[in-house]
Image (cartoon, rainbow, N blue to C red; front, side, top):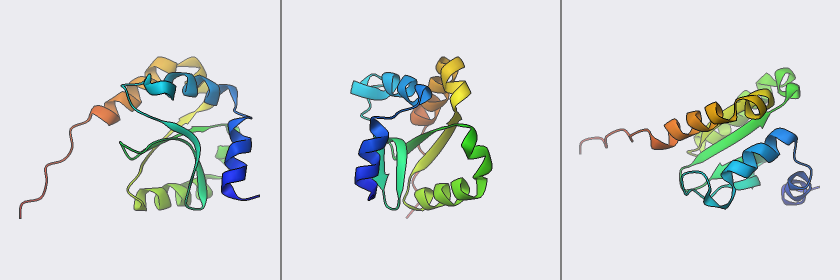
Length: 118
């Protein structure tokens, strides 16, 4: 199955934590930003992405504890594409939703570093 078809399947089989996060991110609800879910990016499918902010949000379950090396490689590749990757555990998304959203807000609203001098 190619990434696009796999992403479509993943959209219809979201975890409860992904559903909770999507509720807050969809329809420009979060800071007026447009997020997409289960979006193919190169060889990967990211949980949520805001292209305008170059921001990827991953919601991780227990299986990610066993695939640390894979996630690190994936994050490195995404960073090389100019994307910032934020990872949150399912437990935190479900039980500390406001704190997770606040962490995302702080990243989005952080001042940009000054441009280098010519």
